[in-house]
Amino acid sequence: MKNSKRIFSVILCVLIAVGSLSFTASAKAKKFAKSIKVASKASITIPAAKKSVTKSYKVTVKVSGKAIKKFTAKSSKASVASVKVSGSNIKVTAKKSGKTTITVTTKAKSKKGKKLSAKMVVTVKKASAPKTTPKPSTEPKDDPVVDPINDPVVDPEPAPRGLEIDTKVGTVSRKASSGKDPITGEESVVDIDVNQSKTVFSDVPVTAVELKSLHKADEILEDKQDAALETDKANGRFEVVALYFAALKAYDPKNPDVAFNMMEELCESPTTKIRGVDSFNNFSKQAMKDNLNKSYKYKYMGNAYFDGAEPSNGYTPTTPLTVTLEDYVYSSEKSNDYQTWIYKITVRFPGADSERIIQVYQDTIDGKWYIFSDSWKGFTADIKEPALKYQALWQQEG
Image 1: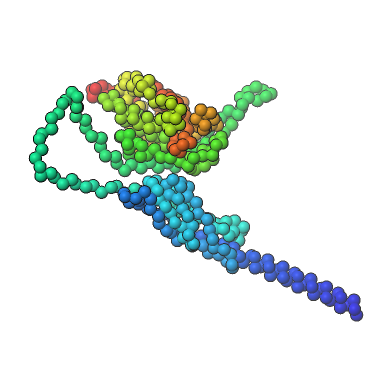
Image 2 (image 1 turned 90 degrees about the vertical axis):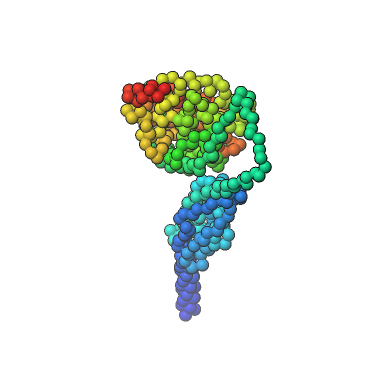
């Protein structure tokens, strides 16, 4: 009898324990994140008199049971707009013109054990300062005396337009050498995926001021090889090359300083200035003149690298103006002098049978991308001549 009671007690304890475990597991199963939502798009305009402006946006987190509704938020370009979590809202602080993606992520996991996220694309614009009309003076003024030799009349530079540049990045397959086979001695070629970008201009800059407004900084990359290839925060490496083509397009032998000033913006980084290196000097200017002045090359050389331009149409690009570029198939190299990694960007275009390569780097001081050394010179070399009817037209224009 005693043994029967003992057995009964043991079975009862086991049943209670199993039931408790089942209840606990069931309770846990009911605690999970179901969804997270935030506005898909937002537009913030910074008033002309302010350096930044902050706006609040609602984030809705739905959970099951007593799962926490807390979440995190991150901006893809904090230099454009930063973000902070405030209760059930996010506070976005717009700092400068551009676009950034805000990602909000649940702290609780879903039923499948994964955290949920939602994205909001934020477009930031800077409002123009209001124009003020000066009051006319009531006092008579003497006509100004102009010395045409010592005080030449210079046309004022036009006010910069509110231009925009946008870059999207995908991938494309290319051939690359993986070295020689140790047995056969033959070179082995493999297919690899490389980043391919398409940069769209609202219009090309025609002054150094306009170009400078488009030459923006990225978040500074960590100091490791090919860091730029592993992130979507380094599109500046493509955009600095696209801006170089805009500078070539702006070159005019009657007023070459416009293009020269653009080139100085793209070549002269804070690091070069600290090191005392004159990256775009008088020799650089002369080299550009020598290459672009001959045979009316300046008429088409800048256009040649834009999409749609080819010899048969006189290198006339399609609109809107776009530039397609690729990362080089081989890895970046470290420059000890510049204390950063040098990347190679390539362009394939109908004006040449092989790709052309330019080197760029991100300056570790201001985060902008710059053209390395004089690697830009290869893009002023000869290309396939445009159709004869265009050459005849340019000769008539003089």
